[in-house]
Amino acid sequence: MRIDILTLFPGMFQGPLSESIIQRARERGLVEIYVHNLRDFAHDRHGTVDDYPYGGGAGMVLRPQPLFEAVETITGGDSSVPIILLTPQGRLFRHQVAQELAGHDRLLLICGRYEGVDERVREHLVTDEISIGDYVLSGGEPAAVVVVDAVVRLLPGVLGSKESAVEDSHASGLLEYPHYTRPRVFRGWPVPPVLLSGNHAQIARWRREQALRRTMERRPDLLETANLSSEDKKFVERVKRGSLPSA
Ligand code: 6GU
Image 1 (tube, rainbow, N blue to C red):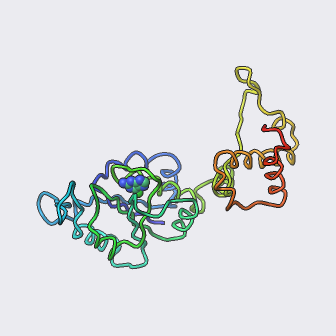
Image 2 (image 1 turned 180 degrees about the vertical axis):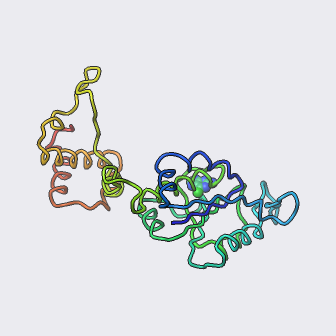
Image 3 (image 1 turned 120 degrees about the vertical axis):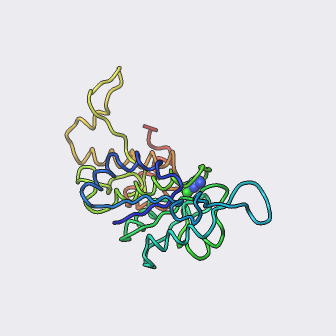
């Protein structure tokens, strides 16, 4: 996959996209990431990309010209490339959206800034608008990093079989079960004995039940859309009726 990022602050990407899993994926040629400075597409010497809002009001608005020309240059007119504006007004970024984006050969992410972007960019240039949650960031850059990370880890070959994305929270529609490592007892707090039992069927069942309990407690909304077996549903009903201790 190739990902292009258009931003006024290229420096905000240097650290986050050059470490850990993303860096390894880049080194292995599984993803190419290019960060472009929007100012390079301005026409004047000062690299002006914003202007005052018609009708008045606070703040500045990103002008359409640099954005249109940057996108046209970067895509080379290929209209199959999704042009994604990161904005708090976009559709909510969830696992399903990450999967959808991971299915494309290319993505172009535009980081919104200032008070906004000229509406004609939304109407005639952008093909998708994404928000990463209900809070306001100073710009789309941190959101673009979030989107890149979530998408890259879904690309074939990026994760090894041990860190497989299949078991991740949200891939299954449930939150993850609790994890433990050595020592067996830390400051008096023991590891749940079932995990030391060597009984793999029992461990799998305990983990599933923990994932179900955790999701019920913290994100009951996820339980509505999760893929539950008839055994899962029975367990959930028993916990709800209170016929199981609150483990
Ligand atoms: Cl994509 N941009 C900004 N500026 N704020 C946000 C966001 C994006 N997603 C959540 N908050």
